[in-house]
Image (cartoon, rainbow, N blue to C red):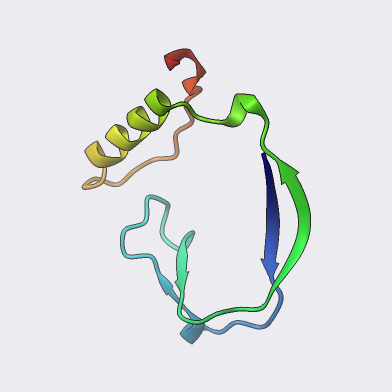
Length: 84
C-alpha cells in the first residue's frame, strides 16, 4: 500500500488553526485547520504488511480509545500483531 507525506507550504497564523477539542495528544500537539492550505509532497511512503491492522486489532484500539476518552491519556505503544 502506498501513501504520501506532505508539509504545509505556506505561512500560517494563529487564526488559521485551532486546538483540537477532543485530542488524545498532549496540549499543543494537535490542531484543526480553519481553511484550505497549500501543501507540498515531500515523499512517498509504503505501508508494509506488518504495519496494517487486522479487524481485531482495530477493535481493540477503538475499545481502548473509548475507555480512555474521559481521562488524560499518556503516550502508549502496543504491538497488536499477536491479536490476529
